[in-house]
Amino acid sequence: MIAETVCSAVAAAGLGIAAVTAYRKRFLAATRIAAYSLVPLGLVMTGVVDWVADTAFSPTAWAGFGVLGASWVLFAGTRAVERRRGGTRKERKAAARSAQSDALAPAASAPSLGPASRSTTRPATAPRADKADDFSDIEAILKKHGI
Image (cartoon, rainbow, N blue to C red; front, side, top):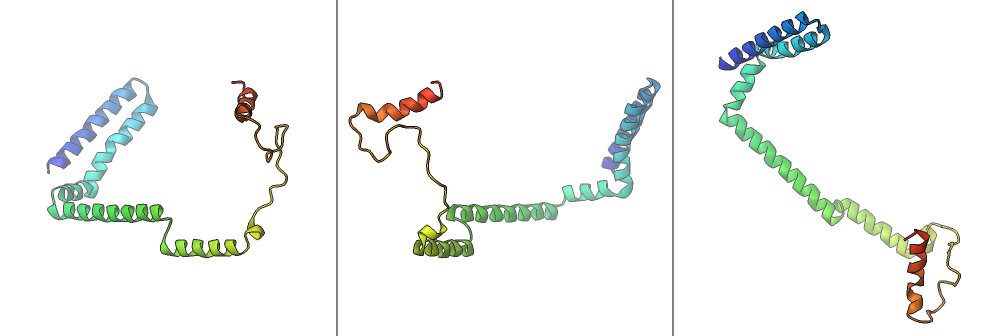
């Protein structure tokens, strides 16, 4: 009863504001305000306000929302555990099977990337001469980026 009265008063006030706005020759804004102000009146007339008011004060409805929330927490928790473990049991078994087949023929499934290009003058397999030479690669990278 109170909710219907409040919604009707909001609709009447909105229509009054729309009339004042239309008087100021802002017809587009007045039409938009009138449309917004008719929404609460339409909700009252369709019975949605009664349903919402009955639901808001119903302990059974709140218990139902609590059950839905618990269900959501359980779904989210199981999904988090699946992500941490690496997927569902089927996905883990499939990954283990593919890992076994990769172990049997590792070179067959490795992608060919072509020859590697290096910007350094000495080969990568050459042993280091001294400790000062260890930082030459880092210095070259920093110089390349202007640091």
